[in-house]
Each structure stands twice: as C-alpha cells, then as structure tokens.
Image (cartoon, rainbow, N blue to C red; front, top):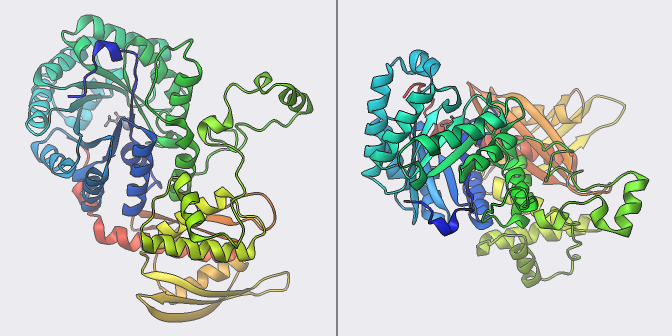
Length: 521
Ligand code: KIV
Ligand code: ZN
C-alpha cells in the first residue's frame, strides 16, 4: 500500500493522468507508441504514479497499460476501473507486469450522478463501494478509491463512503471536483472535514483531482494540499476532460518555488518538464498557449525595455525561477554536419533518448540530412526529428517523394509518391493552394473518408530555415487520430503529418472496439 510514514508527511505524491483523463478528452488520442513514450518521460521525470489508461475501454487501452506496466522502472503503474468485477479484473490483468501497481476504482456518490447516471439508491452505492475496493484488494495491496463528483456529494454520505472504502482496504482516497465547480476555500475545508470526521482518514493518503471549468483546477488542488491532501492528480499541459485537469508543471513548480508558503515537496525532476510538455503538445495537436505558465513560449520572455534593463542588472528583478529549472534553457547549438555518431548518441542521451541501434542509425541519418539543409542545428531540432521518427517509424504508408507547384499563378499542383507496405504508388492533384493540392494527392494514393479537423504549423526554432512541425487531426466514424511530422519544407512536413494521422487512424480502427465502454458503472 502506498501509505506514507509520518516523516514523509510533507511529501506530495504526484499522480499523472495524462494517459487516462488527458487522453480521453476529444482529439487528444495517442497511438500505442506515443503512450509508451509519454509514460517513459513521466517515469524518468520522477512522477510517483502514472495512470496509464482504462484497460476495459478497448483492446488498445489494455495493450498500452500492459506494456507500460512491463517497461516502468520506478513509477507505480495504475489502471482505472469502474465498480464492476469485470472491470476490476481486467484492470488487474493489465497492470500485472508492473513492479509497483495500483488499481484505481471509482464510483459516483453525488445525488445527481446516483439518480441519473447510476440509477441506484445511496444504500446500493454504499454496498458497491465496499464490493469494488474489496475486489481490487484481492489483486493488489495498492488500491485507490474515488468518489466521482465528490464535491457535489452530500456531506454525511461522502463521509460514510470514504470510511467504508478505507475499512475495505483503500490506501488512497481521491475526492474529485469532477465538474470543476468547487472554490479553493471549500475544497480545502472538504479535506479538513474528512480528516476530522472519518475514522482512519489520517492513516491513508487523501488525493485531489480537479477539473478546470472555472479556471480553478490548480488553485483548488493546492488548497486541497493545505487542507491535508498528500496526492495531487495532474496532467501534462493540463489536458483532460472539457477544460482539462490541473497542470502538472504548475502544481510542481508552485510547490517548488513557494516552499515558504506551502511547505511541501514532490519527487519530480523539474528539468524534464518542458520536453514532456512539447511532446504531449505535438502528439495531441493541442497547442500550448504562448503565455501559459511554466511551459509557454513567452513564460520566460522579457520584452519591455524596463524589464530587460532590470534582468541585465539582476535576474531576480523579474524572474521568480530560472528557465533552466524547467528545461526551458536557451536551445543549444548542437553540432555541425561533421558530428560523429558517438557524439550524436551522447547528445540524444542528454536530451533523454535511449535509442536502439536501428532507431539510432535512422535518427543519425535524419540528423545528417537536416545538417545539410540547415545552417544551425539546435537541441529542439534534434528533439523534433527524433520524435518525428518515433511517430512514423512503423507507418504502413510512407512519403517517398513530393514536388509542389505553388505561387500566385494557379492552379497549385502536387506530385506525390508514397510507399504502401513497401509498394510504390504515385498521383498528382491540383488544389485550392499548395496544402490542399498535397492533401488531394494523398486522397488519390490512399482513398479514405476521413475529415480534416485540425491543421497546425509551428516553427521549431527561429529563422527562415527553421523546421516546420505540423500536426494534423483526422476524424472518421467518430474515431479521431492525430499525426505529426517535422521538416525544413513545410509542405513535406504537412504531407508526412497527414499520412501519419491516416496511419494512426487505420491502427486505431484495427485496435478499438468503441462499443466496449458504455457510461454507467
Ligand atoms: O473527474 C473525475 O471524477 C475522474 C474520476 C474517474 C477520478 O476522472
Ligand atoms: Zn477527471
């Protein structure tokens, strides 16, 4: 059971749900390989618990949780389950290979959820709480129970359910603000109240899980800690249902920077934060707003003359933390095209990549190609090209060749050659602009019904020779898939990102059984 000794009472457990609450929000779907990469980043970063998915939801979810469980080095690997024995058993099966494993089982306790969603009476829900925790404990010692819609639950009933869950063996009790309705002082009081009134609450870990519907997720989570919670549920970039969850980077840095006001600490190695944020943004296609705290492009930019003057005299005038603390240091010039393989491998290692021999060879070749085209190759370029290779490496359809006629005199036309399972196929198409022409050509070589939902381009670094990082989101029959690619040629990156999304959509169709997960318990 992950319970703390009194000497650790000021440590806050970081429970990351990017791969579960984050991934389940519309458009944020990730491929199997992307989920493994996110989990590896979180594990390396020192996240205590990784909620890797909802194993009963689909074969794909099960496979991802199972593989993450096999690979995790330090983090506890957690799966989510509803209250039914089938859900819980499937979750237990998925997390089995993990060195440290947790079952997170939840049930709604608010009047509105019990009446309309569960269609159960409170006494039935109460019995189900005992049943689900007992069942989960038969599989593992580390069980978390969540009172879904906890903040809108009637006080006495919440206390009874929490007490029952603790007696049945839950080591962590999570009290979510499922609909993002709570206010910081109320949320803090709820934890104080539970600690004061529920027998056994001081021997387990209380947890926050806050949604951001009123923009209060981080404030509420920190208030929860002040009220006695010692686990905070978060997601990278704050992704999650609707307006999202509390952002990992904001919680961790608030606790680090304001130790004087909040005397609690986490085990997160904060220099990994920016890389994780950029990776999650690239694979989901969810941009990080420029002025986003901690990870936004402008989070450490000082534009006005007065600020710049102050910064030159003493950084402390306008900086409460250094960009390096969160891995947002100036992007380093890497090496020129004469760099050797050993130096390149060492650079990858410092950027957090441990690649196998084949992947290393491929990344090195891509680096050489890039260094031929681009005067200065920066760390961010290397990250983009390796992430790109990881994203598209196993794709059935690959771009082989692209030539585009663009400019003021139409029509714009694209000539495209791809390989599909190794076999070459070519087509040309015109369009309303060069990007449209490229996408129309893709339609001809790989006919499909998917609708383009997002097309987004970012420059990886500064300068006109910067790589373009493109994200594309496609939707077909309610299934959504995102693709990404980077290239110094924006149109090539666009073609590759579209094709990567198409490959991911096909993989998703093969793996997902959308009927498997119905609402309810
Ligand atoms: O928001 C919520 O209540 C949840 C639970 C499943 C913990 O995500
Ligand atoms: Zn949630």
